[in-house]
Length: 595
Image (cartoon, rainbow, N blue to C red):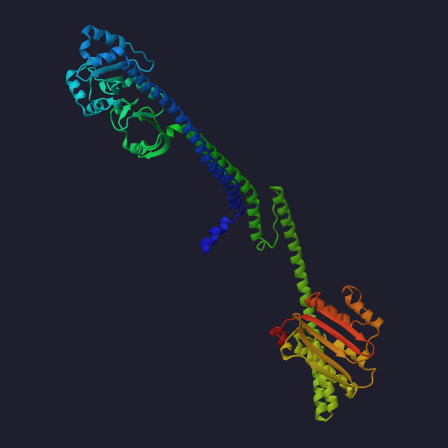
């Protein structure tokens, strides 16, 4: 636990607070701002790049679509040629020369801006054929006897797009893209033959070369028809592309993650035959510039962080170094008996603090010397006070001896007077301090009233209405006697009948309230106003001639504050009430019973 407190104490230093405050309120917000701005920015750029890639793919799709439309258009032009139609209906109607002429004029003179080399073969239903390229006869039989060939010949107006890279028909054995289309007689809707219009795969490949990354033209079976990567031609698409999921969607884009990294997959569909163009681009390649900018930003932020750390540490060191020196000197104050000073320097606030410290040390040193002198004077006064108590003790002992002599001689009145006088004298010596329980103050008043009864005889009586639990309330010594003395001298002495002094105590609004009431002559209004004015006067003003009431009031306020004190109310001929207000406080045992 102590180690933990030590560590927390070190963390609580000003230098650490400055450092971590700058870290918390400057660096962290910058990093969070960078993070939360970078991610949305990356998403926006990703969408923009995706749209740009889709636009590029759309253009490639448009060109490939035109490529296939040109193939379809060329095949239609051939099949609607009257001489070609007549040849397919009546193969024996033309001589060999006429067939060569027809081959040269119709099949070999096709022009297209999309393909350069065509393979055109026309088949009739009797097994005859006419072709622009040399056909291997062994492969021809396989071609004509294929299942798809027979199915197409059974139904009119059939069309089929194919990719041939293994079942080669022509002698050059190049991968070709073939449009197989039945030639149907418009009058009888009966197939009279078939045309196989083919172009080399290498003619369509340049369109895919313009796409970034890996690009594929894929048929409906997921076989790569064309690609800049020649080794992929004729093979299925990579399994991680999941071609089956793409077949049901015309176009789109998605992020693909593999063991080799993260990829952007774009795809579009050729409307004419349903084949798809698939583009796979490395995510890192597309976002390389963004990643480079992000890396540069991170390096800049790191540099700023290091720079701010150095600046922060230097600032905190310049602030804390004088403070540490101040702390060290403060720890050495007692050892050096407050003879310690620090050279003023550092920032304005620190130099002001050090200057204040030097003045404070100087003041403390002066105060210590003053306290030392006052202590010596106090001890001297205490010694003199102890000496002064010798005479009152001697008088008290002498009074006690006289009292017992009076009792022995059966002079009880004199003995009682001496007993009361001894009690008063003992209470006035003040051996138990200035604060005593109410019980002791009442005992002191009992002695005083007993002594006064010798003067007033049966004309004086005292009544007490004090709950037992309030007898231990803390009061100031001799606070009742001056008031009761005033009641006797100015109130009761001049009336006819018995004078009664009533002392009551209660708790009111969490304050101790004690009242001393008499049934004396009362106080005239002008005299009462004068007394009340004296009570409200400043304690430092010159004392009046009669200082008993004012003295008690000032002593109460000095002891308990301005909320304490006494007040006087009186009506002429109805008596006087003096009210004491003190905080509720039980007298301490040492004060109640002496120390």
